[in-house]
Length: 70
Image 1 (cartoon, rainbow, N blue to C red):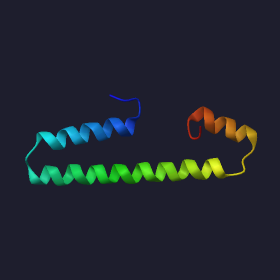
Image 2 (image 1 turned 180 degrees about the vertical axis):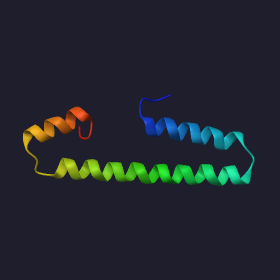
Image 3 (image 1 turned 60 degrees about the vertical axis):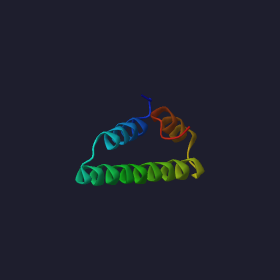
Image 4 (image 1 turned 90 degrees about the vertical axis):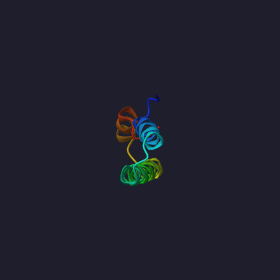
């Protein structure tokens, strides 16, 4: 598996989707995958906003250390 938690979750959900034939479970798994995509997009938008913001160098350093920006 990967070090990225969202990719790990995606891999697990997709694996479960392949293993079941139950339409209700398929619906729930597909919905979960869609929600995961939304979370990834929101996270990316937040990171972009932080990278584009004019922040104090100390704030930038702390955000980098916490993994919010690269």
